[in-house]
Image (cartoon, rainbow, N blue to C red; front, top):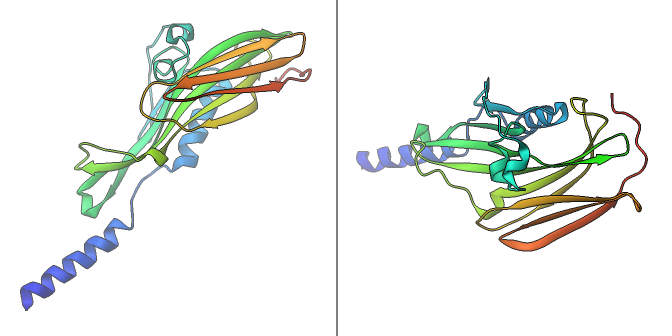
Length: 207
């Protein structure tokens, strides 16, 4: 009987601990850090509470619209905190990660239109941090249309689109028709092709 009670107590404690995932930075914090790099027009890396130095020099154009490859360019951004734990530390690597970067940059009036793409994932962890995983509903892609008055100026977000997807690579592309002032964003990959258009009004400098 005593062994049975010990087992019951352990299971109760494990259940209580599993319901309290401990992580330092939530999605809102990770997103705010990522957004700040993007708005400043800089590449950046943030990992588990620290901003990391990056030495990437490849132009954003080398990614050819790939969201995954964009994170590896000079205008790429990655931000994550996977220090979350559960089950008394047996489950590790829990938390949010966002990675991507600048996909396209086009002249617009006296400034620039830019398309950023990013992959947003909630990682559910794994045994001692190995084989971390996420479910389909834990992953999404976001495409952000920005206006920047000039290279190096702080940008303004004009529109954001969220795209669900399946396993595989996702690409994003931007075109602009000055005669109709229409920007068109196209995303393709392991999902039905996504196309969205938005008219851009005359914009004042953002700085």
